[in-house]
Length: 389
Ligand code: GLA
Image 1 (tube, protein in one colour):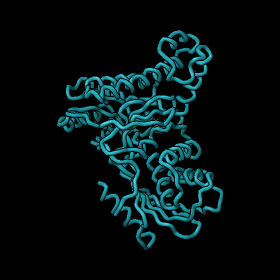
Image 2 (tube, rainbow, N blue to C red; image 1 turned 180 degrees about the horizontal axis):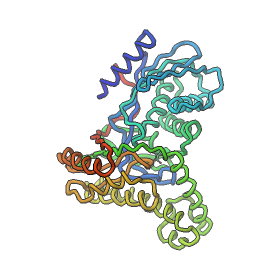
Image 3 (spheres, rainbow, N blue to C red; image 1 turned 120 degrees about the horizontal axis):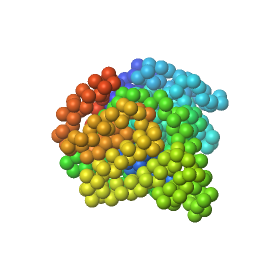
Image 4 (cartoon, rainbow, N blue to C red; image 1 turned 45 degrees about the vertical axis):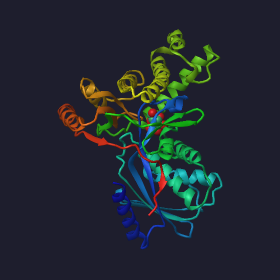
């Protein structure tokens, strides 16, 4: 899979620039086992990079112009580093311009470059193709122009670029997972301190199966930013009553129920999800360490219930997919993954049962919504890297 995308991206570069690229980089998408919508709420998350990538073929061009080619879209965009870098109305371009803008702000000595990129990460499926693009370009420019940025800085630049040039007030999980991913390891990330530890991605007789609703999360930007505002409001109210609370991490369910009336229904639901989800991640790490997959699956299913009923970021199609596997003996847990409003569910499934399950659910899904279900069996893989020829 890696080879194919590297070959086709390289060939496209050669056709367009009449020479071979000096560098090839691969930047992966991510899954998240558990810990959804808590990265911007001082929680913990448990993501991992996967074997689906954006491939970048890049060379310096020794002038100040940058030429960006999105192979899959067959589109080219040019800009000059001497000009002011501002968002444009082409979405994919903004992911790259945002990073270049951040680097310029930091005083990086950038020079012109030519880049072709191509992706096998499904877009809008909750697998963070956007973080892969931001981090891939940041990582590449860091290497090529010797910018001496740490991996953490590259992830933070990606996140900031998404805030400023794309307009999604995202947390740090996706960029962090894309850059820090390790083969066969999940990352337990403390989203407050950015301290992290790796845990074995060993699911014994089970595997992680992604089912793609094929519903693109077009509501994501507004819905996501709305949720952020809601929980910020909620936290302010909690802090007023309980001055010992600095973040959601210091908060418990009892405090929330004491404040139920003041918070009102909506903010109570949102905050209650956050507090419980932070606890679930801790419990999930213990379950994973103890190879207690029944427990892990159950926690994943509880997360889905919260995302759907309390945080309200699921949609009918994903709820259907999750409910449909609920009574399957081969499935230990299932939940919506990523920002929501469409995209994939992540399922903890008995090895060997995947194909039958996919066939069964796809049929039911097609009957219910008239939409083809897609499925991805992913491997936990290495983070953003320079590919050595
Ligand atoms: C998106 C954001 C992440 C995170 C998830 C939900 O993927 O980019 O920062 O908040 O949604 O967990």
